[in-house]
Image (cartoon, rainbow, N blue to C red; front, side):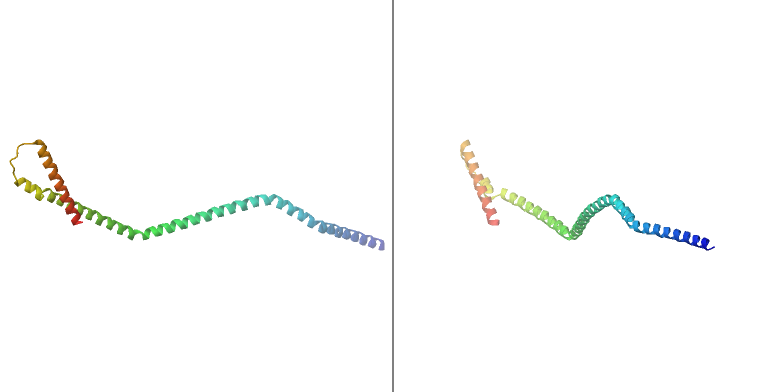
Amino acid sequence: MSFNADGDLELKVRKATERISENMHIVANEPSLAFYRLQEHVRKALNPMVDRRTDVNKLQTELQGRCYDMDYASSALKSMQKADEIFDNIRENLKNAIFLKQQLKYEESRRRKADSSSVYKRLSAHITLDLPELPELSDVVRETANRVESMMSKATHASNS
C-alpha cells in the first residue's frame, strides 16, 4: 500500500505542478497578450477617433461663429427697437418741414401776385401819351419797363430776406 500511496501522491504532485506551471505560463504571458490586444485596438480605433475629434473641433468653431452672429443680430434688433422714438421724431420733423414748405410756397405765390400789380404797371396804365406808332420805340419801352419791374422785385426780395 505504500507503493500505491506513493504513486497516488506522486500523480497528484505531478498534476499540481503541471497546473502551477501552466498557470505560471499563462500569468507570465498574459500581460503581453493584453498589451497586444490593446495595441491592436488602439491601432484600429485611433485614426477614426482622431478624425472624429477633428470634425468635432471644426463643428465647435462653426457653432461658436454662428453664436457670435446670433448675438450680434440680437443686439442689432434690440437697438432697432430703441430707435422707434428717433423715427417718430424724424417723421414729425418731416411733417413740419412739408408744412413750412407749403407755407413758403403760398407766401411766394402771394408776393408774385402782389408784384404783378406793381406800382409801375399801374402808373404806366394811367399815363397816356399821344405818340406816333413807332414799333421800335414800343419794344424799347416794354423792355425798359420789364427791367425796372425786375429790379424792383429783386430789391423787395433782398429787403425782405
